[in-house]
Amino acid sequence: MLIDIHAHVCDTVSSINNGQPMRSAKWGLARRGNEYIPFFPPSFENSNSPVEMLIAHMDLYGIDKAVLMANPYYGYTNEYFLESIRKYPGRLKGVALVDLLKGKEAAAELEEIYRTTPLFGFKVESESTFQCGREKNMADEDLLPVWDVIDRYSQPCFLHLFTERDIDELFRLVSMFPRITFVLCHMGADACFGPGAKEGSFARLKELVRTNPRVYFDTSTVPVYFDEEYPFPSSAAIIKDAYRTVGAEKLMWSSDYPGMLNHATFPELINLVTRHTDIPEKDLALIMGGNAERLFFSDAWGQGI
Ligand SMILES: [Zn+2]
Image (cartoon, rainbow, N blue to C red):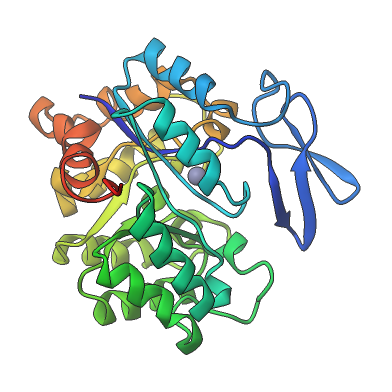
């Protein structure tokens, strides 16, 4: 069983980045303000990510199921995710997205989504989530109603952390909301491996994942932080190190499709973990799909109506 817990689809890019509107252009580029930036691989002609294209990749590379990952960087994708999971029942789950900055209003919106649709969970990518509120932080008082809803519905939250402050906020959230499961995207991401990352941040997160049964890592995207070609030795070393510290039960493989196709092929993203970390077969089975099956595809999460 191979499950990708972090794949992006969208009918169009429509978001804010660097304080400017960003939208799909052509041939993989996005237009941000007056400039064109590489976004998807150039073969993505309309600079969107159709679900049919994801399914074609999954079929070709033997990926059984995927979690459609929300992110305000792409835009608000709830409707497209619903369409997608209805089109491919049993193979896809979709993560819900509301504007965290709207606080109480966002909480009501999210609760309605949990009550009436199969979407589940929540995503915060702090760089994109706080484009319109740079001074805000995840666990600010006025944003707590959103976390309260996630907690009441025992949902998972996928976090892409950028700063030391984000890590502090995560620790606050973990202690305040005992029913939320946290998945730390990209092994701790920019907060651990980005240019401003502090020494010791990865160790802090590993300790949290090791000791808290509700906190996990997703293994995607580590290669973007290092100037390396496949087989990405630094990324393999980080994943191996985490495996030894937190155990196979706490790691979930993912691709961060399709952006990562700008850096590697799908088989390389799979092989990075299965062939270059020396993790034994039985533990790979958990990392590559077993944990995700148990967490996201076999219980009440995301069943909805
Ligand atoms: Zn992503």
